[in-house]
Image (tube, helix red, strand yellow):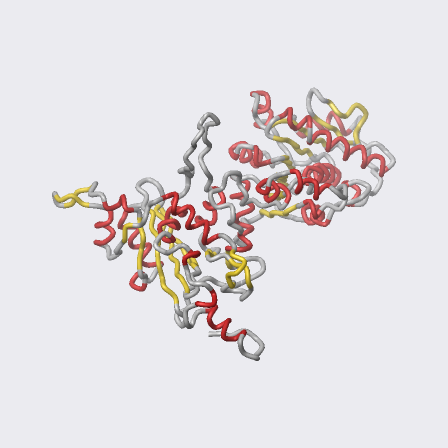
Length: 501
């Protein structure tokens, strides 16, 4: 429906120009918004994600914002939706109608015009001429045609991770409503979602985690602990009645917790630096004792990934940078050589299948290994035992309660640390999962899914050049000059403070 039609139908008959003043908090009910809902409400970014675990008040937030934007801008029009229309009707619509009812009770008058909720047309008309349309996101031809004809000032997508990205882009293009007085409302695209892999994580969460959010985008994390209005035993019961992976994802709000992860111990707050609590940069320091090593996964049509890392005297591994691009071998060699000081690397481990002479040069059989070597990059065939490699990486990721953290100096530490510069490796690790196997298979073989795993393979090659951390010497036998040996020396003295090399 066009703006002119709304004005013609609504402004003469239904619109009341005098609406009692109402607090911003009233749209969130008698108890008001939570602290996180206030952040979401007041954010001026055009695209806003309110995401996290269950019980964080996500659905209520986008419903409240829809009502609020309807009253800030008379004759505004918004679209509140979910991927599947029936799911919306059973969930989000109930939240919306409950919110409207609560606002009306607090204001002491109706805010919806008489007979203003048309369930057939799926629209709710307010007394100031604004309207909320609602429904599904294109499952039926009717839904698709409706979205294509929209002119709106805002949209809100509940459980947005379910929605196809191409439909979201279509919604963005419909933010073009012009108000009857010739002005424009402030446009917003709002999303609510539990943690799920996919476009929403790539668009909002990962840039936020890396400290580089996209322009006009904001991610507000909402957890159970942020919602004071839940029953007192709600959190404890969820933790008690659900598996650890489910709790990590839907209670703790981890966007990196995916069912069936190959490396479930990975935690950005533990393994990635810099992070929200530390600005420590993982870079080789020339004055300290370290050994540079590399891992390479070559792609033909897929990206080639090179990881630069180093080990210290205590057996910790630091992945400090990555190269991750598609292209020819010559392009990769130039890019890797410019990014890393390869002459200092003790070894560069690569897929042994690259040694196969599958190419030809001047009539002579030629391998990809030899092509890299021609450009000055000497490769070593990695141990490609995948089962052992998955286990070895997992051992370095696991927090050992007796291991001294190389950055904080405290007991309890993993042995693998990754720089936040390695955005592709950090994207792949949480979504590196086991293949699903048939229930009829009585002796299934564990296999990782071969999808977007180029950086993970490079990491596995690199780490398989090192021994298992549990074969390394104990702390009381730490190599001379290592952090642990210095710490032991310090603990036997009477001085206070940390020994610094």
